[in-house]
Length: 141
Image 1 (cartoon, rainbow, N blue to C red):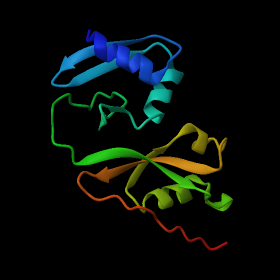
Image 2: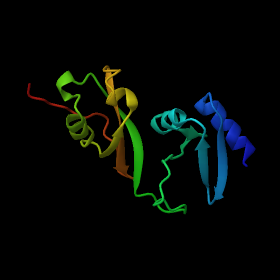
Image 3: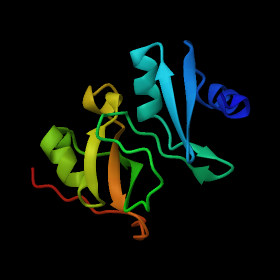
């Protein structure tokens, strides 16, 4: 186990339950959470950085290959403040997020409409592409 990194994650994530950190080599770690809601908190939190460098967290699946590869896409969290209420549908939010990249999922508060001051959407962008400073969302009521 990589103790300094484990301690860093404990301070960063501030979880109530315990988790295990398993070193896979090549810069990869597996994290095993005791509580599913804490896994969701970490996956939907962030962006996570260490020494001002981002680290990417993905939910494990059998298709994931744990090897160093050149990143072609990068998941980022984007906030869309003050969206009109009629845009708070999954399809409309997907179209808004598509102005920047490919939206794989929404955070819980956006999905459940428990916070409507802004929508927070994970968007996959092409590595190396510049990010827009803003996007214009026009809607016909």
